[in-house]
Image (tube, rainbow, N blue to C red; front, side):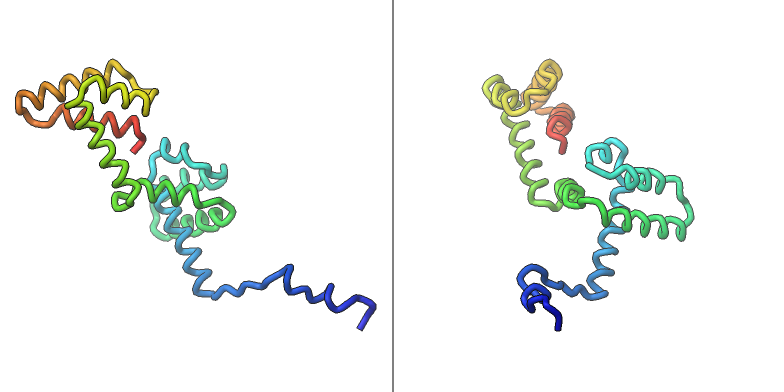
Length: 175
C-alpha cells in the first residue's frame, strides 16, 4: 500500500452507506406523484400559500389544461420528479390539516363550534375573548352575524344565521 494511513481511507464514522430497495424508491416516487395530483386539485389561492418552487408551480398550473389521460400521467410523473427537489413537509402538513379525518382538523372544527355557541349565548364577554384571539376580524360584520344568530335561537327558527356565523368563523380561522 501507499503512504496513506489505513484509518484515513476507511473511516467508518464519517460516512454511512444507506441501502434503499428499488421497491422503496418506487413507493417514494408514487407518493410524490400522488401529492402532485392533490396539488393540482387545489385552487390558485391555496397554492399561493404554499412555498413552491417556480417551476413546480408552473407545472401544477399547466396540468389543468392537459386533457389526454396518457399526457396527464406523464405530466404528473414530471411533477413528481420536480417535487424531489422541493421540501414537501409544508405541503404534507397543509393536506393533513385540511383532511377531514385529521385530529388537528377535528380539534379546530370543534373549537370553532364552541366559539359559535359562546358568541351566541355569552354575548360581549365571549366577543372580547374572540377579538383577542382573532384581532383581524371585521367586528361590525361579526356583531351582526351574532345578533341574527341569537335572535334565531330565541325564536326557535332554523339555523340559517348560525350556519352563516360558523362559515364566517371558519373563514377567519382559515379552516
